[in-house]
Length: 332
Image (cartoon, rainbow, N blue to C red; front, side, top):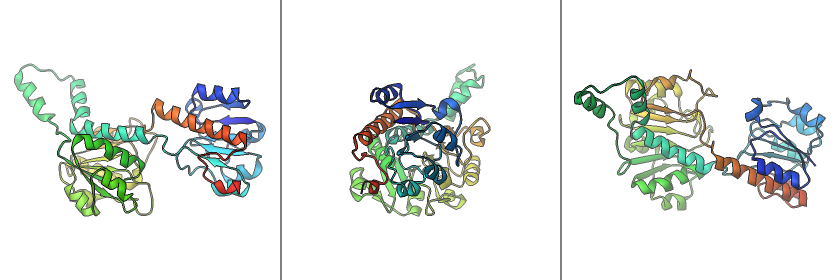
């Protein structure tokens, strides 16, 4: 079988597939610098007579599925919206994914952003790079007071969303001796209890949290959830962390709140305009840590997604139902 992989993949994973008899063509979008949107991948799939296609951001839409002879479609995302699942199911084509591939990576980055903001790490580095010199202890004292941070211990952290990633963040925060507030009507009660969390409504979370961290999907319920009115309800010392979706926050209102000191700072890994570069207006502020949407960008994530995809392809080739299948009904 011929396999086209445009998602990032380890060399060992490619070698394992080839050793198992697959003819693999690997063109990671990270190397080509190109994402195929709409039906732009159609010619490549048809001309290459591919049986299996594995993508990350490339779109496999209905027109591609209907006009090719694909036998298996895969995404290294957890819940891909770039594959027409309904069209694949109609043609009895299994679609596989990689749930939880970057859960730990994003959880750890969330903690890192909290610590970076709490200890003014970005502001300190920027100050030292701005040709700051200590001529006497008065200069040092001024700097010391300006960069005074706070400890996480004893603080209250509000979670908007306690799904897979939120839960992993909360577990790690237990070691910092924080109080955890949870706003998530769909959260597993056992998991809330495991992290010593207390369920609250939005107003209570906004008013009482020293750090607010977002771990919810972009839905009709969550889009624009935090705007100017919500920032006014927060403490002036509150730090906002967003490693979830940019659409949950009104970016213009957040920028205004950070400039005016309505809230103390933010750690951001998601933005309405991406990819992120030096034009990002949040970079102008010393009270913000800006990351270019790299929450899942770890060697471990790459190895994990490769391992899961390889195992699922091999299961499919044996005639078994892949473990991480999104449409098991195609197996009857």
